[in-house]
Image (cartoon, rainbow, N blue to C red; front, side, top):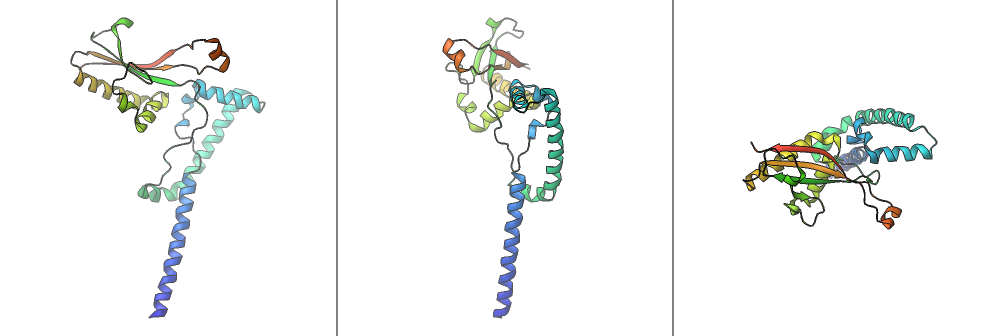
Length: 225
């Protein structure tokens, strides 16, 4: 009886060691860097991305356009290899919830965006005076649902909306916010979501008091049904 228990105990230890090794390999492979949403060539046109590419091309003495083409080709090959290596582990990672679902920061965002939500009582507002700013990120006055937008998950979501890769998610989000406004404010007939984009000023511009140029992009207008 003791011999049987000893044999079973050894099997259990061996199985546990194999399982632990399998888990470590699966998690380490899953944590390998991946471009994720960056594997969209349209997203590379963003000024922040272009600035990083140009800086690295200059450091390495490369032509910026050729450098980007080579990086894209290498990224495609790497993603294909990573997908093939991870394929046997995907069911386990999904079942246990141990997937690496986000990527680390790769560079400072020098053209940050801010979400702005405006409302109008006019069904067809044309003038800037016909719009009232209800919410704007980091504003002291336009603070509608500010606590909601300050939540960590919502901040991450709004950040993604400012990238062309997440255009559909931004569209759905703007529609949902508009419906919430229509329910709360019967007098509002039109809602507009848009992003401001401003280049982060350098030390010299800050000392000189130069005001950055504000660009407005990705405007979406939702009318009351």
